[in-house]
Image (cartoon, rainbow, N blue to C red; front, side, top):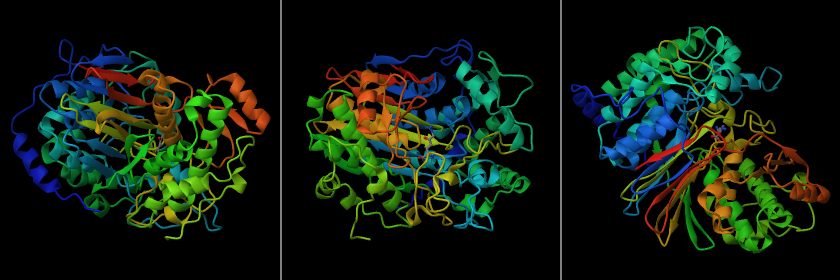
Length: 573
Ligand code: DON
């Protein structure tokens, strides 16, 4: 794995750019009006499109492409805007994965996942008796890994065309001038008010007297100043100097352990993407430390030997087969997957046809599987995230999933710097057999080690058609991410749905343990009954994922779809 070394030259570059102020595109009567905007769920654009969790962020990305930028410029600017307008998951205090295919066929997998602080230990979240204290891995100062997002954005810069100063300016303006919040955001901020008060020692922008309501303006002055430091000094405006000092001071006020050295040492890494075919479709997804790419490869290849389309969409037969594939893939996740720099992940075996055919040997179409009887395969070698998809006029495709982990991360805002820190440490296995917040199990492969990346389920994914750019897709949802992407791909490939239906049709989820099937409220009641009659335990759950996808139609148009399940919105031209 190569490290990404070009951060310092970019810092220098942004220093020179800083001399000229960047004109603002944010304000009433300007390209982006933060006080009046609409949600667009589905549109076909002639040249370029963005789909993200927030209308303003999608507009910012599309605007950058209109100004001569490419899909990478759009992805950088959209992520920065999301850090302001979508504080529950958009972030500079978290991390993510960017997967891209340039129009010349080159693939890029950029890993900017958080890492465990240098002072972290395997037993960090266990008390003297060895019992886990999961509140510490989920809330407050000790829950955070070293943020990777800003390093990731600067590692993306060599592929972009516009200066960073220009890409970050809309985010600065949105933070400084404020933007109007939706009902969903107002509810989010109100629901977490108590936690915000509990886990912060300084006044923060997310707490106000009384309740937030839709139409209120959220202003984030301290965040604007942090973004300006990044605009001025590049990545060192975050990992060193004033911002780093504020992070470490915040740690001292809580029980946090992130140090100046941890911040200075953080690097984004290049990862070789996971590539495979499913029914002659070329699919590309993210490699460890995300489990996502391996999981969707496993699930798709486990069902490839069956005539899924003839079973029909969400019939008992097709759903049961897919549940059993999901169960087996998640059993492998718990045993075999972790940060590849610390744990040997048998990638080739895990996604090989021979192994996956063997894995389905005990599959019985007439009987519900039982997780306690399904173990990980034996191999001889040793809830709040956000996704954005972009395709530009040249056919460059970018797929980014980024997160603070659960909604509003650790709930701790860096005092004086105005951004939320992640609670990603909970994605490590705090103790074998103790599930994380998403119920995922793990062991040695995903144990805490200083400098190690915690295993993720994020699954930014691309698909080609006739070896050319075709689809970019992904979603939030913790462990339900790979199963949502899996089902969207099966909907497109086997059930020949258009992108809107592939994304918005009801979804289901099984993850080995707990041994139950989660279904969305609009899942077929008939199929549910039939599965229950077979012995499956079925539970209705809140919406599964918020998938953003764009594909290139045969007429060259960019069909952009934003999931119906949130405020997600597309933009383009
Ligand atoms: O990396 C992961 O798998 C989790 N931290 C993602 C969390 C997530 O998707 C929450 N969103 N709904």
